[in-house]
Length: 607
Image: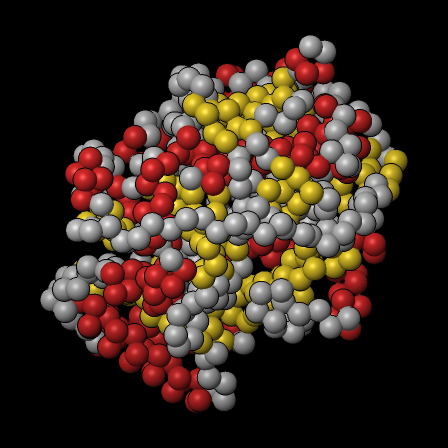
């Protein structure tokens, strides 16, 4: 065995977003014995936020918590331990973050080299991109006006180059989330552009680590099994040169690392597990294997890779006008009925005021009754609720229109529904919209700047993605005397958003459960279950994919988030609860199997 194969690189995942906890970094530094500390700050929504920040102040546009919360206060410990840091906290201004960080390092009297990655920002090319006729890859919408940000999702090789040039801290703009882990692994193990299986394995490691505590028991279906949320452990990947990884967490911390927690995160925000496309490689995760190798230790193996595509994904955020949101508690009999009548009356009064001020009508109004299981549609059980919160949303192209509603809605407390009490919150904020498309890699050259020198990092142009067709998996016939059991007794489930669509992964608790899940959870049946989320009449389109290595099914539900995470008016624009809506789905199983199934009861958690 060579020294290279014996080498283990320990990477700690400290954040799932730019607003994640301040406790993760000291925990990982104290107990992680790390080589790298990585931070994922960016999502589609945060790019719009950082773009607005820079529009107000050209020196801004990056994650300031990186300086004040996550890294700045711990620079001495990071330097003393020799831990390298990689973060996409640069937002739309990685050069600005690097400069601010260098000043902070100098003031602390430390010697740490900072590099930053650019090339993702396409705002200077917006007119050319619009003229090229790009349309949204999911909705077909035309290229937007009033662009706030426009960024290509770069890959990991620029990060590897920065580390090779001696960087201790690398900050980037928009890269694919997993690149913050794949970049260090390319550097440490010398993986090349053609090592597709290894690049896919490193991408999988990044996908598991970049969402912080989501893989160590956060948001887990069996939440009662997860100890000590207050001190939940953040993930550590023990990464090997052959692409395998042991996922664990610091000793003495809360949380849970199990096949269930890792499988849920593996399929989180994934469409086809056999065709997970990132900038550097097309990944096949469908045969990935998870093995429990002790308490809070799961071995991950089996990722496969194919050549990358010729395109980068691009995310454009644009100004969509103004949105006012009000939350009114209403208490008493027929609370939901009163809330609906009250909201319609307040919209009507506000429209009268719009006309009086010669302003256009609202572009959208929506009411969400929180407390009557509205998110569950026909599967809810909240009829007759005696206390609800009436969430009212209005959109208007002019701030004055949103302000009119924000003021007028207060009248409900004294002139409308009995039981209306003090408003919980009212906000008026800019509305951000998202536009996604593909652009050729040939026109984009990533750049790395380190010690004042800027280096271009050419990447392979790639080729069209090809996925070999898979034989259909066997589906059993409905057994005689079949018994319907709740999905939760047979499976774990996790959901997440991607623009206008969301995915729901259903992972069998035992391999023998999968055929019965496959039989009942047809695309048509799942579409019917989510019919109340469809953007128009009829059912949402549902695609079903298999992940045999995980004994899992993955569903993609299209056009069901009503504008995506930034623009949706619903209670759950991030699709965090979509899997929760499926847990009572009735799955038919043989009567003898039903008698032996354990699983969690939704009421008391007993097995």
